[in-house]
Length: 252
Image 1 (cartoon, rainbow, N blue to C red):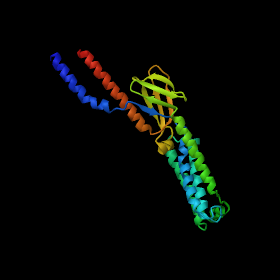
Image 2: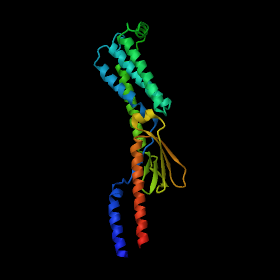
Image 3: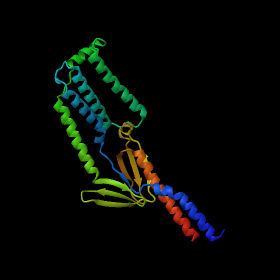
């Protein structure tokens, strides 16, 4: 085979592989969020309770079953969210048991509230336990959490990691401080440390290991499966391009 024929075959092979490299992203942003982002179910529940009780004429009446159930629902979801922050659920079995216990407690509370004669002891307890909160409380909680989430979103724009085909960048600080790490030989490891957190926001831990550098651990990276797949695709496209350049050098 002549040199001209080898060059023609190399060009055809490069064109066949080019679309995969062209489709690869050029930059991926990684933001490690604080655990408070997992409180969004309680935040949304406070909004629903605030809207519901805003149309209730007697939200603080102990005989108002709707107001009591709204408070019980808010307290239950808030308690589940706080458990998520306080404990890890590395296995699906432990998460299933926790959900079963939470559903059992909530179910018993509703039975005691709406059907007190089914379990008289529980009905008597619910007649004494009448948790209530004003409309202002739910609006205040919703606005407070909304402000915190807005601040988290702002801080995320000043402290994040960016993966590029040739380098890993760490952006931090109001004045845009920047650290650079070599990326071509970087290895990526994904860990799902908490099944509950993964279900809430598809989050997990990414461990980035640049060549000849310390490992970089990013906790609570949202939508981690998609981020890992995109990074692998981008670095894979880079390897294809490097191989193509090597083949051209060998032919020349």
